[in-house]
Amino acid sequence: MRRLLAGLTAVLVMLVPQSMPALGSEPDAAAQVLSWTAGNSTAAYTTAPTQAVAGPTTIVFENSEATGNDTDMSHTLTFDRSTPGYNHDVDVNILAYPDDGSNGKHSVDVTLTPGKYRYFCAIPGHPLMVGEFIVTDDGEDTTPPTVTAAVTGPQNSDGHYLGQATVTVTAADAQSGVASVEYELDDTGFKPYTAPVVVSAIGDHTVQYRATDHDGNVSPTGSKGFRVVERPEDTTAPTVTAAVTGEKDADGNYLDTARVTVAATDAESGVKTVEYQLDGGAWTAYTAPVDVNTPGMHMLHYRATDHAGNVSPEGMAHFTVVEQDAVPPVVTAAVSGTQDANGNYVGKASVTVTATDAGSGVASVEYQLDGGAWTAYTVPVEVATNGAHTVAYRATDAAGNVSPVGTKTFTVVPSDGDRTPPTVSGWLTGNQNARWEFVDRATLNATATDAGGIRSIEYALDGGAWTAYTAPVPITALGAHTVKVRATDNAGNVSPELSGAFTIVKSTSKQLNTSRRDQWLVQAQSVRAERISSAAGDRRLPAPQ
Picture 1 (cartoon, rainbow, N blue to C red):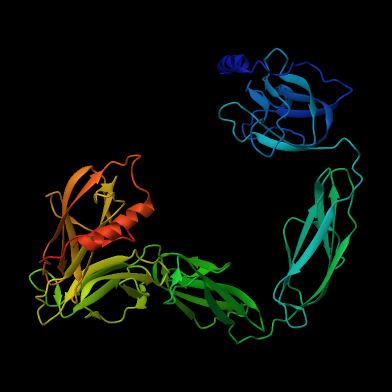
Picture 2 (cartoon, rainbow, N blue to C red; picture 1 turned 45 degrees about the vertical axis):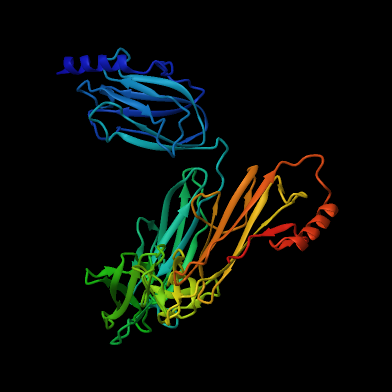
């Protein structure tokens, strides 16, 4: 077995990183010396330091028969150089075993800095061999620890503790660290403080306390006085209340999260515990406000118990959580009424708007008729005015989301039957020469009127297809042209066609100036029947005969 272990350790020696500091057989007597020892245990080093001062230091690691290793077991002393919270500026990785040629004792010189170092054994199967030590500044520590105490427990109105009091002592030392904490109860002698002290004897008490650091500095003795009194017979249960808070929608539902805060008081023995139960689940200790973010209806029960064992009646908080609504409503519209063969509504049309919202719900619906003001929609909208109409509509939900605007277009025609075609006018404008030819371009203009409303105006140029007229039409092609104009009303009646002929020529340097051209146009008006305007330089198409 010893040969097997020796062989294993021989392999481990080869695995020691090349960056390991040079090892010596004896420590430098002038440096601070920190010593570790190991034996047959794989759970802990036999000895290890807990404190050191910053500066040059000799690290000594011995794993030999003299330190209890009679099995030739290998151990390492390795400093942690990666775990957060520790110093990583020293590279120590010493492998030692009794037959390693140095009788298991090795040393390395390093420089320690203030802080905390972690060390461990890197041999597989030895994970429990780990520890840490604190390095303080190389200056002498003359400052004692800081030590405080707190007394807790249920109190009466006079501040006396009911039945028992608990004393908790806390100490801290920024330099060499706290070595020990002691307390003394009622002059019975100082004892080591390891856990909060419970005092249940009835009467007045005094707790004294002190702490000592690793450099032997002792804090001033602190003192806490208090009185423990009999716990009165308490038959009154605590008073407990709950409040639900959070952002709400118009229906009072909580958006995304509801927070429930429970508060309890007890004037006699004091509140011992507060509990809550959510949606029929297990009773749970209440320590902080409860956030509920699951969508749906919820019921939270709550209760409190005092130190006398009295339990309050259960309270209940009922609320609903909904997801934040970022989706606008869906809104549609339908037009109804009696229609003629052309799809026009005879006499009147009725517009019905419908909106739905699966989140926070529809808050309002509005409509706009023919570009007018937005109006609240409450009942179907009746439109009886003859002509073309457009109804726009939208909806808003309780979360403030507004739907896109929808539109419906339709035409209303008289109910008594409209057989009268519209009246249409058409004319050409532009600069003309003495021969009534348009120079460079002519512009076609048209308009129409009808008591029942105009559905469309159309024109046809040079025998081409009928084209919708929506704005003045510029014509620039040189040469002779013909043009026709007609209009259709909302009842489908078509006006007689207007027609005319004209010519467009290219401008030349011999073109007349404006004042001379206007005179000729006036003269032409007296001898021609086409109603030519001298002011605008236009030529109207002849009215149908």
